[in-house]
Length: 125
Image (cartoon, rainbow, N blue to C red):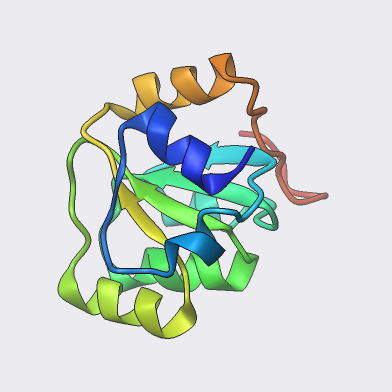
């Protein structure tokens, strides 16, 4: 699924001005969702979308470390200015949707986007 398709499904807006021709064509193969940094760090990030309500720089750093395709903030939340600046510097697309995390996950799953997986060796607790 393309990132531009994710935006339509989630009724999401871009948080910062990005080259939509380049970033919108990014391929998203799975989705992860959490409001806990410790859980996010246990996910496999490459080619995955991160749904979260966390709005600080730590979520940007985690997304960079795990190579997420993009971050979508749920519940109408907007990231802190420092987080937006860091995402711009790192080229990480940031989206915002008014949807609750539950509905955002459901819409993406119904559209055929599977859940992501955890890193090997990380227990599911």
